[in-house]
Length: 367
Ligand code: MRU
Image (cartoon, rainbow, N blue to C red; front, side, top):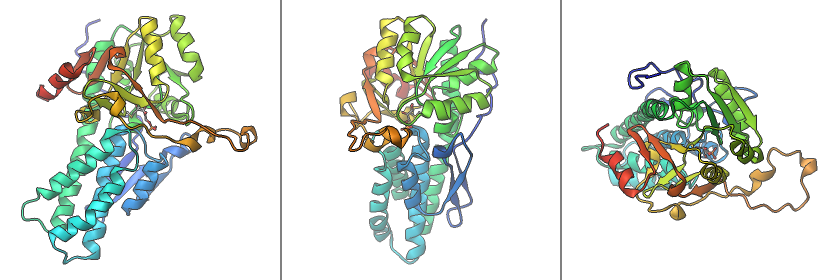
């Protein structure tokens, strides 16, 4: 069936993880506490940047695009704190006060490029504020955060359309971790094309890896796909290679926390194994990510810092099962070489077999 994916209506996101309410002076950032999903939907209201940082660290808000957006709004809260504490402050002193706060936000988690990049972009906009005073600069920071929020929402639509066009005809998909509506302000990254295919009447089936140790697949992907009406079955991570080998999967599709300039991909730990299995059994391994997740300043995957979360290994395990003095090696992410990536789906189009040259064409393409 030929489908005009460029103009087809897309479904609304089944859930949203973040919203800002108000102006810079009185506003607050609201975050859906993802650590409590799917048990309940609790919204947390933040008026201080420090509590946003805490929530990024404990994964109440998580996923590359949305931690970038949360970081941009946290910078507004940090700037407001400085502005309201010392209303008569001059601009150089304002930046002196803001910089360490910005640094604290930017470094809350190291792997997803979106967080540091969003904070740096906010600071650039703030420094370019013509003849600004602290109040005007804080307002400019809010504009920058809202712009990023809207950009990411629209990027999901592009990813949904380009990804659906590329994947159409395949029906059984395996995904890892959660790269859906909960990681951004729109339909998601890896899940966006799947929502589009489902909305277009394709009878798709999604297998979601449970995603040890924090179970983002079991808790979050299964939850949001079910809310969106998309058929989903959760599998133990260890079942994925066998499922692929036995011919039950037409494509693996995952998101990314950072894509290097050469196309290597850092994503949730376990992704690399899926890429190897897909390659071995001749099915596509697809990565879906907005351009904000491509880090042209990081040459290769080996240069991407990998967050270690040693305490997470036992987090969802009955304490009675944990040996005393348990030691863990617990990277939150792994690196998949570009050579194993069949296609990189972005809001500007799909790049097959991504490499440095092909990735650059995305940035040269008019939006
Ligand atoms: O540690 P998390 O839950 O923030 O990790 C998120 C992931 O790794 C996702 O799988 C993802 O693809 C990146 S966000 C689109």
